[in-house]
Amino acid sequence: MVVRTGEQYLQSISNRSKVEIYVMGREVKDVTKHPFLKPSVMSFKATFDAAWEEDTKELGRAWSPYLEEEINRFNHIHRSPDDLAAKVKLLRKLSHKTGACFQRCVGWDSLNTLHIVTTMMAKKGKTEVRDRFVEYLKYVQKNDLALAGAMTDAKGIRNLKPSQQPNKNAYLRITEVTKDGIYVSGAKANITGVAATEEMVVLPTRAMGPEDKDYAVAFAIPTDTEGVKIVVGRQLNDARRMEEGEIDGLPYFYNHEGLVIFDNVFVPMNRVFLAGEWEYTGTLVEIFSAYHRQGYGGCKAGLGDVIIGASADLAKQIGVDRASHVQDKLTEMIFLTETMYSAGIAASLNAVKMCDNCWWVNPMHANVTKHLVARFPSQIAQLSIDLAGGIVGTAPSEWDLKNPKLKEYISRYLQGAEDFTAEDRLRMVRLVENVSMGVAFQIESVHGAGSPAAQRIMFSRLYDLNFAQEVAKKLAGRKSEVKFTSKAEPWRESQSEAEAKEAGLKS
Image (tube, rainbow, N blue to C red; front, side, top):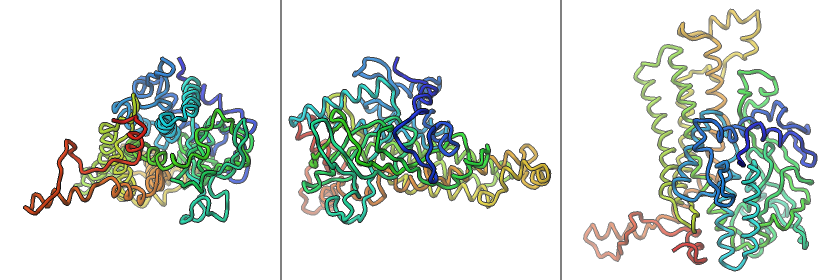
């Protein structure tokens, strides 16, 4: 059995000696005990617990043909459309248990991306890269490692390519190549959960040309590596976790992002998957982006469920739960949530077979999923605030509630219906505030896995507008050159599908 428990995960990350982790300017030695990061660690822990708890065990595990045994699904290579659907369902269910991002998805999507890309490379003669990746995959699965996916670069001036940047480290780059490995310098920004991980899988953030070959780099290293510095970013209401309360800051589960600095870091050659092969960067980015956009249909729907439940409870607490306008708002929130989820499931079940036992999400549906996610959480949050009332932004602190001189007053004036206490209301108000207006539901929904503009670009690439015009001409009785095929959708083949077909992987 290679499926670890949550406690085993906690033990593995409690003692580090090389990586430098900073929170608000101060170095953190043990992320499992630091009040700022502990909620993030506990959210990560939930992904390990899921493989053991009865209600999530089936979704939380998968069979690995590489090890011939069960593994944690978060390190699994998708082998069917059902596997991809299980991913979306698992993410929704885990959101119910954490009310936060559990931060393990980017590493999972990175593994699946490299699985396809290195298979393509092997078909074109680079079999040693594929062999390296398979050995790394086995290592990850056997040890049930917590991975961060590190893709987003600092980027500098956005309209310049990596090689054109005045700051040569605006994108992570190879500074030296030796017979034993490579040295890299630069940074990766907004990396989800990175301080709570054991390994980082690093990928290029954009398509590149031959002039950018030093920036075309993909590899994996332990998070605890010499020269790695992690600066944990600030989030809404994050300092509340330092207060060691139990209501205001939701100290049980949360998430974080970090700026990861690579200060002349050495990567052994057996962990290098791209080193100058710029021609694969476009395909890699397209494959990864679609994988990650599909998953948002699960986790954001799960957080939507949390907000819907809290909003309904708050409406009941103040006696308006049966009002028609309240029911209309809750219904609208349900519609928005289920639409995101439906798109994620569609992206899974209409998947693309890229090689033997190798499945990629449907690229059109995946991009539609993320575009819905970029829009709907803000609408859900607005409705939840409407239902909860202005108290979401003005409620007294839990310390006021616990102050003996104030408790009697606050308990009297914060209470609504007799069946609920002032503390019941404050707890639910804080849940709405921290979840609906938090990074995981609001900002990440817009910019995670690419901004809305990136999805719209993919729509125009994938949708065959000329075909649709020819169909319309035919139906209007005009001269038409339409050629019908067995395919129902007017979609073009994606770049990644074309690459797989060229490599002889996809028929």
